[in-house]
Length: 211
Image (cartoon, rainbow, N blue to C red; front, top):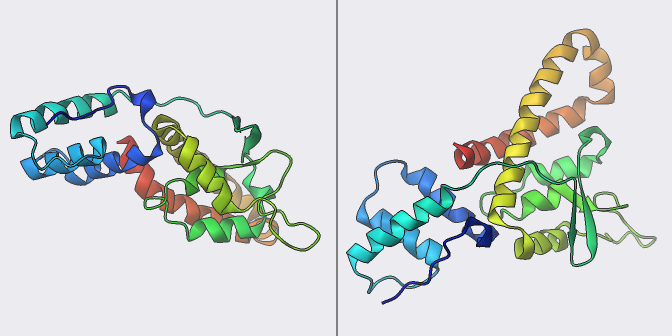
């Protein structure tokens, strides 16, 4: 049986993120069953009739392809199907609903939620409502756009960006909490708590993906 396999990282979409999850779960010791799982996950084909020798060969190719990832800076703007999306950079200007919603999101099971929270339609706010109080730019619609259009490497870049943001945030918080503790509690306290919780959930995914 011949397996169809993509040999270029740039050709992999967001659905291949599960391969990285499996690699991180298994670690360094790979059994033949683990290799079969990765090959099946990567090729998205039935491999039950594939010879073990071929499984091993494809497995090595897969590791080489996924190992070619190198982190890059993420764009401030993305255009998809004629719609412009802007990267969220100032978290203190976000509504509380963004933090509440993102805190409960499962980015490992539904990876497209991460870019859906990170990028918002240009000129719009998160969960902006119309005159009838209907949401004009639902999160689920934006997530579907990224699910169908974001490349695996772009997703990994985005994960790395938020890990960096976490480090910067911790430094900022340490430097300011002593002098401005009372003011911060009034002006930004709730936002900081939610933001920190959200970043902690990202760390569990991002640290593994980028290790």
